[in-house]
Length: 479
Ligand code: DQQ
Image (cartoon, rainbow, N blue to C red; front, side, top):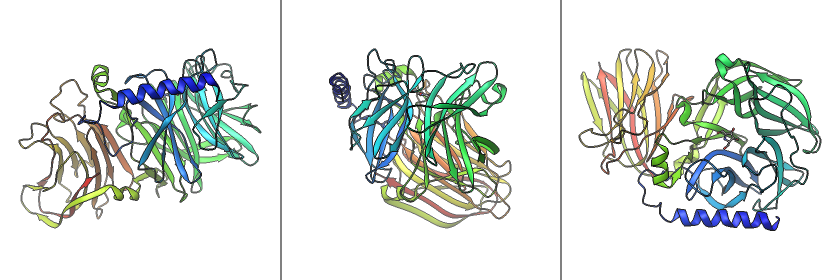
């Protein structure tokens, strides 16, 4: 690492350490989700399994809790769940092609040399840095940028390289778009990661449906198909396409939203784990004002790791990693409860700020199940997860999720149709200001909430309808 890069990294780390001291008592700060010791994070970047440990890099502002001064932060984990912070990895080089920021990208193993491929700004261009054997210090490639600009016409953006190996060659996808036409992912190939040949757009969208630019593309094989994930501007959500890939062309067959929390779940990143599972994480952005983020001294966190898989209908399914069970502590459980009255509640004896809540219930055609989460004793604050069996919809109602009227309390909703014999199966992770909901092995809905009262810790279950069977209602403390 050059002396100037070393000084920049040392300055970034000192800034983080000073800011971190103040944050430990913040009741909104998640404790089972990864986030930097202090200040801002957004996209996860460059995840790689290296010497049997998972490395995570991420978009990080070491100097404040708002977006800016983009560096790559760094953490390491043995299980993708418990992370250890490491010093910031890559800083912008004054006067270099990344002088205005180290934007998103990936890491590859180039014959034993860990190599980060990222977007330098401004203008947006693709750059390389090579790491030491522990991925702690990074040398910028002298020939940066390795791709200086977008091909003619693709002027809506040119960023977030995703690189993989195909035979003896490398392939790179870069997020882009044509003004007036739509978002696109541009395909390149190279033998050495340094000289790249443009092959053309791999997929292009229609601006009226999927926006003018696609950020953070991800592309990987899954079963006998391939999956492309993009993040369209201005829709600000993660969209997947499942289809067939051959000869540099990808033909989507199905598509959908990765997570129905829409903008609260963004910039997904994937890694093939030790067991061969395709694991996804994403940036969970704040749903509160910049002033609130500034006051808090931190912003953004990483979702819990989820395995993605192909569902029989050809869509993308997802489930939280079963290893998350290692976070469970005390458990309270009710089993085989018959709800016989028109309106009946079942209250958990266990509450808290970081919980896993599970429900398995066979519901009759008509009826509504409401999980009341982070509920204060009189319900002044509560977040409602409502399943309407008749309409087949799952809704997160955040109207009373916080007494702070400045936070975003809009609802999130998605279709969830159950087969005649199918039980409702919900798993919810609550972690202070984070809610992650998984339903019936495939559907996910993630959002942020900001309860203000210390006693907004209750969980109960309300059923309105005729007789129904609750097979299991379980609440676990997480730590
Ligand atoms: N965030 C990065 C960009 C990317 C965007 C900059 C997505 O590389 O397009 O922080 O959140």
